[in-house]
Length: 626
Image 1 (cartoon, one colour):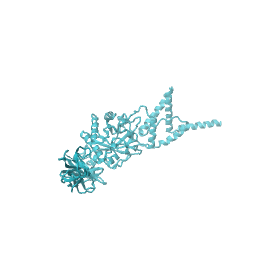
Image 2 (spheres, one colour):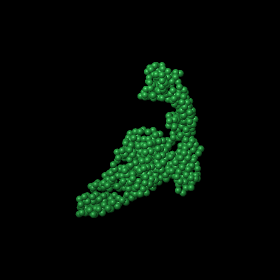
Image 3 (cartoon, helix red, strand yellow):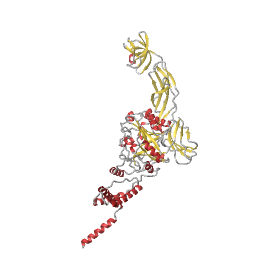
Image 4 (cartoon, one colour):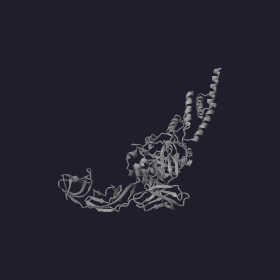
């Protein structure tokens, strides 16, 4: 009797436990039944209809969860567990359900969120285990400079690519700017479903159209470029385009501009045509190996932009934070053209101007996924059309695009670390010149439609320097000494000499900002030379230039007498040992006339076998007669 009573009590407890099972345990049961469904399908079990119905129910619940929270990843089906293991997992599931997972899809004016590191890593492992066979497999071109970052071997600001924070923090200067959220893509992202991407909140896209081989230097079209431009246009996603550059000269930059523009004809390009100016990886690629100076790197960028502008498109330059800071004079670009800055972090300390911020390569967007790459680059755009059009020592001129409905504009300015203050209210038209400014100083501006608090333009301009007074004097038959007054704060001086054969000035010396003189040697006697000088100062990682000085004309002193110091001295046609021998000066102490110099050689006239000949001998073999 007691045994029957105990059995009844056990049955009652089991029934109560069954009724009180949490929702997670029920869901787990459905997972187990779904697994049973797959096993039965494999062996052809006739009872599959009932299990299929349960799997369908489970799938509906999963879809509902996905709509509520798009950043939650679908975990892999779990294997069958023993009863004890099942109970333990049910307890863990109850704990997990109480965690709040941030939503990935937010209003574009707010920071876009990413999932917590632990959840993301679990989801990644789950995805790898359950990757559908239908996902596209992408094979990289061996010469593609973009392949390195996919393997985590990029340089500088690209190396820490994953953002593990809850939200982005925009710089305070952009708080009143219009923000848009978008992506940049290439064939590495496979075939993209642009309708899904747009539905997931994508407001713009920058599409790679071409690249230059990082070793062979050949220009190639991205294999998905035409598909991406066509389908993004069809989906109504505004697009810009870019070329992954490896240009090492202004000439190559112009070639890249021509190449990308040729390949975007017939497509609707709403946003800039971009030069991607970055190293492939540390020690890798023709651009890295070229070791360009900051000035040369800036020239490459501006050459591309100038060419694209001439071809009728809006140009832009893309580079990492460190590339802008260390390898270019970024403000020399940003005053005239948009800047797209990459810094993989939840905030950036970059102090220069930028209109696009690429903040991660670990973004997830509906419709973008391949077998080996579930991610895409994510960006913010800050709407801006303000450009500095003219720089003078005491003023800056600027222009911006008209804003629908605005009949006038308010202009704010700041200098140094101070705040913005209004300088002009109710400006008619879309241009303005700010006068009475200090020379060699950076000024930041913001433009607003009159009476509103929405910024539609921002930029920082650098005023020019005043011209330098310049003088010169011939100090020898082959030397001219140039002098100028020393100016505090100057970075360097460009000294240029006129080349009569080219009919143009060319730089002969970049003198230190601490100097106030330079001697130009290797000149011809009794000859006039023309010079000019221009100072510059590095400000806000840009250069403030002074106007060229008034050109001066300086004459060297006359010819001098000299004697040979050795016997059998060869007279060369040019200043080189390999140059043609015009004859031999046989006697030591032979009298010659020195009429100039070139490096370690004197230009002389001397009689050989009764004929006067002019040529070059080493300075060490001649003694000047004072």
